[in-house]
Picture (cartoon, rainbow, N blue to C red):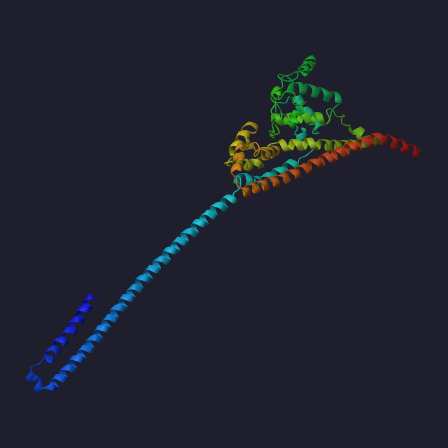
Amino acid sequence: MKRLLNRVRQILLAPAFVFGLGFFPSTSAHAVCDGCVVAAVQVASLAIVTAIGTAQAAMQYGHQSIIDTIKGVGQVNASMQAQATQTASDANTDSQASVARSANSRNWQIADECGVTAASQGIAEAAANSTAKCSGRNCPASGGNGGGGGGLSANQAASLSIAAGARVAPEPEVQAALAASGACASFVGGASSSARLNRCQVANLPTGASNGNPDADIRAETLFDGPQRDPSRMTRRLTVNGEATSSDYRAVQSLLKNLDTPLDLRELRRAEITTDSGRRYMALKDAYDARMAVAQKPAQALLANRLEDRSLIDYVKQLVTSPIHGNWVAQRLSRSAPQWQARGISFDEMIDIESSRRHLNKEWQVRMAELSAEGHVREQTSMQAFQLYLMSQINTKLDYIAVTSGQQFGTAVRAEMLPQLASAHQAATK
């Protein structure tokens, strides 16, 4: 801009100098050539006008250039300001989204992922296994495998086979001898009752409690709490070894035999069973066995729920990996079912774990204390679903109770009415 102004000065000064030379001529020159003076003045005026126009144009161009430059700077500043505003807005949006995600993550969390889905690992199969069990005569749970093992004496194994219907029943006296001798050798001795030990010794029968569970064949705890190695220090066991030759399983079989029919009637011979009286006995025997099977069903079902089930191995494996329940479950099973990885646990053990792994577990209590309100609702939903499942199991047990109660009522009716009915029938057929 400064260079432009200097150029203007140069243009203006040049014609002015010429104009000065022509404007102040000598007197003689003016007199000689007025036309020349007029022409010079015209030329100078034109030059001056042209220079002024050029200067104005140059000034206008410079002014516009300055304006354009200022506009450009303003546009750059505006663009930069817009970009800065957009960047700040994006950063604020990302920050808000991060906060929202964090809040949603906390709101949508659950108490324990492993614990919630563990129930899908084999429980349905285990439930089917525990209910679809044989009950009554000729069932393995009644001692019908016909073999020994489990620390039982030969006489006790024979007694179980007879009671289960796997062997032909001899005279009651023979059965009594087998049962008395087998029980003394298998379950009497050590920590068994002194009175029972004395009876066996007086009868000159061998003792020793070879099964390892003293008095297991006459104690209710054998069924409800599991066979006990030391009756003086009983421990509740919800998982029982389900192998047919295990000492625990054979102990439960011996108890169930005493609950069913300790001494059966001698089996009829061919000449006896082909008579009218023999056929009548067969019909009554079938009715008797059916009713005893119904009476034994609750006990058999309870045993089925206490036997090891490999279907539940995956269920336990998932639970022990849980950060909330893992330690509690592992410590519990180290006491109640230490061989769960190979043999599994019982259905009742699973139910008890599901019922107690929350309330009795410190880690769960801590987790619930820090969990959001939505997380509490999800945990409550899970527990309510488990309660519904328990209700279905309770309904099954109520069916057992209802049927056995009906059988008891029927027995009472028959005891009262059947003699009268038979007497009336006899009178009418004379």
